[in-house]
Every structure is written in C-alpha cells, then in structure tokens.
Image 1 (cartoon, rainbow, N blue to C red):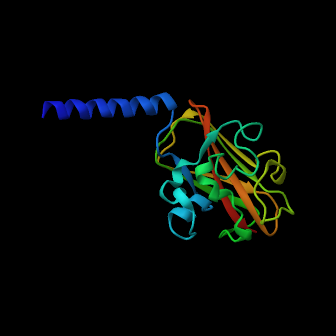
Image 2: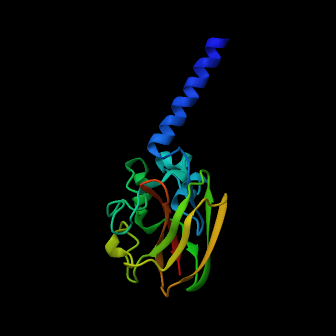
Image 3: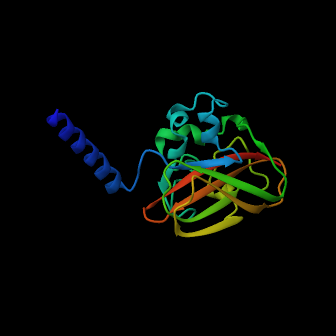
Length: 194
C-alpha cells in the first residue's frame, strides 16, 4: 500500500513538473460568442474535426500576433498541426453567427485560467474569400478591439463589448488571448455573417 501511495505521489509530482516546465496544461480557453470553430466541432455541429472535438480549449501557439505567432494559413489552429481541420475553409461552409456592424459582446470560456496580458480581435477585410484560409493579408492589420488585462487571471467566463466594423457578407473574427507569463497565446476563429 505504501509503495502504491509513493508511486502515485511521484506520478503527480512529475505531471505537475511537466506542466510547470512547459508553462502549459491540457486545457485553456476558447470563444463561445460568436461561436468558435473549435466549439462547433466540440458540440458536434461540425463533423470530421479530428482531435479538436475533444479539446476545443487547446488551440495554443506562440504569442505576438500578427508580427509573430502562427504561420499564415495555420492561424485558426494556432499553428498546431494536430488541429489543422480548423484552418480548412470547408468551401466556405463553416456555420456563421449572424451579426451587424456596431456593438457586439464577445464571450470566452476558460478551463485553465492563465493570467492574461490582453485580448485582441481581428477581422477579415471586405472582399475576403470564405473559400480561402485565413492569412495576415486577409485580415485588417490592426485589431478592431484590444482589451488590456494587466496580468490578471480571468474568471471562468469573461465578456468584452466592442464595435464590429462595417462589413457585408461572410467573415472570420480571429480572437487572440495573450498569456501573461508564458510565451504563448490562445487563438479562436469565429465565422460571422453580416
């Protein structure tokens, strides 16, 4: 019995050390409003999503977007090849949240509440082709909303209200949660229909 308890304690310590060393755990956060591609996969609305359906909260990549971070065409997956299904435009068939230009409330759900530097929201340019992958060239160069967070840990759910720019047709919003004390950020792409 004592050997089993010791082995279990060592296993827990090693797991904790791994999480501490990498600055990462197996779960983190994603946008719920407008609903993100990873949430659509997790709730079964969209099929053939690969492993993201079991871990919608794990779209983590290097921070510093748009100057750094995931490569063009891999932005929605945070540059993580395991979640490449999120970058597939699916012929423009991702379900889209109906929105209007003007005031909109963005909502996040967190499963591991890392301290946050900020939250930034980017949108595709007018004339963007929904049949193409999201690249820096397809996005406005500046976020339309930046919410500084000053290294504070967010609650389990968090909302920001901002102003959606004038657009028509289908677009993608790229939400970026920059983690304060790791080299990473979390990426969440939401398809919207103006």
